[in-house]
Amino acid sequence: MEDKGAKEVRGSWSSRFGFIMAAAGSAIGLGNLWGFPYKLGANGGAVYLFIYVILVFVVGCVVILGEIAIGRKTQLSAVGAYRSFGKRYSILGYAGIVCGFIILSFYSVVASWGIKYFFTYFGQIFTGQHIQNSGEFLTSFISGTAQPLFYHGLIMAVTVFIVALGIQKGIDKTTSVLMPMLFVMLVILAIRSLMLPNAAEGLKFMFKPDFSVLKDGGFGKVLSAALSQVFFSLSIGMGVMLTYGSYLKKDTNLVKSSLIIPIMDTVAAILAGIVIMPAVFSYGLDPTGGPTLLFVVMGEVFASMPFGSVIGCVFYLLVVFAAVTSTISILEGITAFFVDEKGTDRKKAAIISGIAIFLCGIPVALSFGLLSDVTLPALNGSQLPILDWYDYVSEYVIMTLGALAMCILVGWVWKPKVVIDEVTRYNDSFKLAGVWSFLIKYITPVLVLLTFLTSAGFIKL
Ligand code: PHE
Image 1 (cartoon, rainbow, N blue to C red):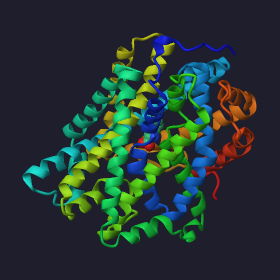
Image 2 (image 1 turned 90 degrees about the vertical axis):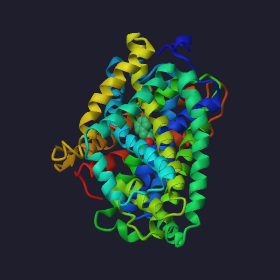
Image 3 (image 1 turned 120 degrees about the vertical axis):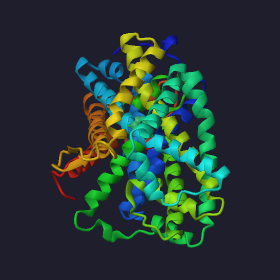
Image 4 (image 1 turned 90 degrees about the horizontal axis):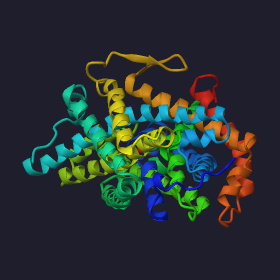
């Protein structure tokens, strides 16, 4: 296969720091702040955390290295990159684009709740009035029509604006400022949470394992919840990391990057857990509260906390920052396809894709109100509400199968040497090349397949 060489028009990161911040920005998002704590809560706490961390290393780091290396090697976004190995492989790139559309359609809706909460808490600082019942507040907001649509549109508009500005001026600049701020805010909020009475209970729940959750099919449930979370949280299996890798200059060490990004992402997820769990226990709330944990439960917490409005305002700002650095990466994966493959102008590609995603997200934005009765089928025969279905199709089906296909292709068809050669091309050493090849050939695909079959209901672990 011929290398295309860096094309100036495609743009590139300003520095290694710029790339790491953008990639970590893509990884760290609602998956960490919203998904991780509630999945941890619903899957037994420490056991889930333990399995999750192992999977980050044996699956996450392995796949991310493959994706970034293929991106840098081909200097193309997902469709073109996979096609350069043979026309039939481009389907993997297309699946990624479809996946991006689906994810952004629901992700933008959940992120937009964060904006609503941010404005609400910001207002409270001045009015001194508090949300009386955070469950009712959330329900009455999301069951409306105009407001959920308006906030969903707002997130999409901001995302389009940043992506239209391009790699260095838009994504690189935005994430290089927002990511360090996000970590500072997370640490401050975690310290605040640790100072609450009874905080130790929350920590115990997070870090002291109770293995009984693994009995009676529990292992398969925890495994598939943890693995799909690894894919979603690291933005892998659908071409976003590959696309970000394609804007790399030659001098970035790929092995280090594919360790640093997952480590930052995992630290952010654990910090989010430390912000949320002690608070949940301290106020006697239920850690298995599910997807609304971030909004309803934290709402209760802020309402009963001194300076709750200020802290709530900072917290939801953090949620919005984290979400936007992820939404731009998803839109970039789609925009780059039109720019690379169709020669479309970047601004035009970003605007048109943004509008299409806004439209695709309308059913999700209305799924708690006008469309609350609608359900859609999953592979195991169950019926899911609209938001859960979008999440399911993207996270459990396409990303999992996408990562599986990439492992099989790199491990068996194109051979690990393609990636190893790219990693070591500029004299960087790759001491763990043997381990990595073993993992991508034998361990990672088997784990991914087992998990997929379990979550689809074909086998029980
Ligand atoms: N990783 C992001 C998060 O954890 C979500 C995401 C998925 C971003 C897929 C890009 C691609 O919130």
